[in-house]
Image 1 (cartoon, rainbow, N blue to C red):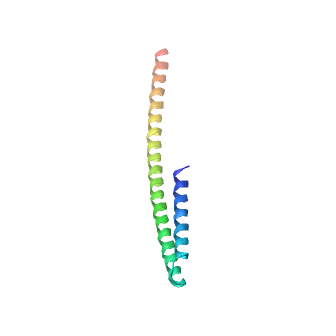
Image 2: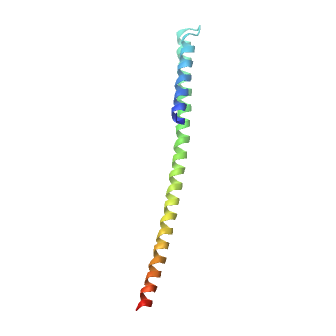
Image 3: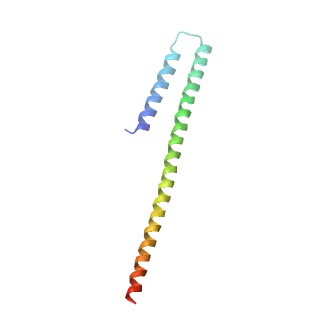
Length: 95
């Protein structure tokens, strides 16, 4: 199972457990609803924080890929220029 599936499974189970626990708590309905709302808001905030951290990690990885790709392109162009120069030198020696 991937990390994201585990994360979402745990998150779903925890949210369901919290909601069930509050529904069976010996409190009045309005207090229970307030607790459920607060708990849902807390979970939503945690999920948004996790998504934001994931977004930052993905952006960092993309930036590294762009940087590494540019470096590889520059290296390939330099190697091609060197080989072209070597070929021209050999052709000139043949003439």
